[in-house]
Length: 361
Ligand SMILES: Cc1ncc(COP(=O)(O)O)c(C=O)c1O
Image 1 (cartoon, rainbow, N blue to C red):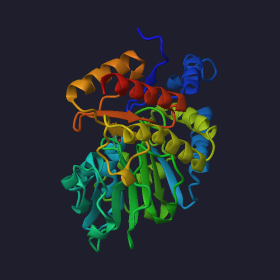
Image 2: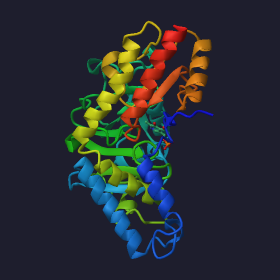
Image 3: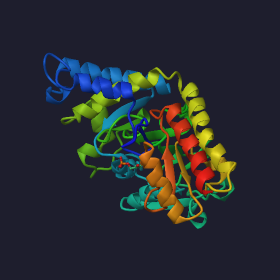
C-alpha cells in the first residue's frame, strides 16, 4: 500500500473536496432535528430553504440573469439529450447539432428520435482531435437552436470561445466544465450539466433555461422531462434526490471559497498547463489534441507503446495517482482535473510523469 496521498483523476464520478467529504461525514446521521437529510420530507421548510439557497448560490457564482430559470432535474446529462429537443424545438421540424466528440455525437443521435436533426459540422474525420473550423459550419434556416458540447470529456476538446451562430439560441452541454469560467448568457437558450464532475454527485442535473422558451414543450413530453413543470414546481414536482441536492449545496458553498468564475478559470488554466508543459517538453508523452482546442479539464495523453502505458498506469496507481486510464473508446491515459483536484495533486502527477520518463524514456 502507498504511503503517498491519494489523488483521484477520474473523469466522473470525480473526486470531491476533502472539506465537503468531512462535512458529509459529520452530517450523515443528523442533518436536522436528529434526522439525516435522506430521511426528511422534501416539503419541510428546512429542505425548501436549502433548495432556495442552492439556486441563489448558483445564480451568484455564474451571474445568471433573471430572465433565466434554474431547474434541478433527475437523470443525468443523457436525459437532457432527449429533454432538449422536446422542450426547445418549439414546433420546428429540425435542430442543428455540432458534433465535436462522443458526447455531442450521442446528443445528436438522441435528437434524431424527435426531429430531423442536422449535423452542422463534425470532427469525426480528424478523430475528434479538433473542433471543425466555423467557416465550414452549415446551419439550417429553421432550427431554433444550435446544440454543442462545451467540453468533450472523453476526447479532451474544449471551446475557448462562444461558438458563432446567428439567429438561433445556443444550447450547451457543460457537464464537464460548468463553474470553471464565466458564462456570457446573452447568446444562450439553455445550458445543462449533470453533477458528478464540478457540482457534486450523480443523480441531479442543473438546467439553466431562458424563461421565454418555457411553455412550448412538445405535447407528448413526459411531465418528468418538461422544463415548464419543473419551473412551476420549483423542481419539486416529485420526490427529489435529497442527498444529491444536499451535496450540491455543499459543493456550491465550497466553490465560492475559490473566488469568482474568473479566478477559477485562471486556476484551471494554470493546473492544466502544468501537465501540458510536461507533454510538450517531452519526446515520450504525446497529446493527440490540436493545441488551441485542448481541454483544461480532461487531458488525454499517450506513451510510446501500450506496454509502457500499462506500466505507467500501474506505477501511478501504486504511487497514489488513481483512475488515469483513458476512456475505453479512445485508449491511452487521461487526467481529469476539475475544481476539486488541488494544485498539489496536479504537481504530484507532473512530478511522477517526469520521473517515469527519466526511468523508462
Ligand atoms: C460532456 C458530457 N455530457 C454528457 C455526459 C453524460 O452524463 P450522465 O452520465 O450524467 O448522463 C457526460 C458524462 O461523463 C459528459 O461528460
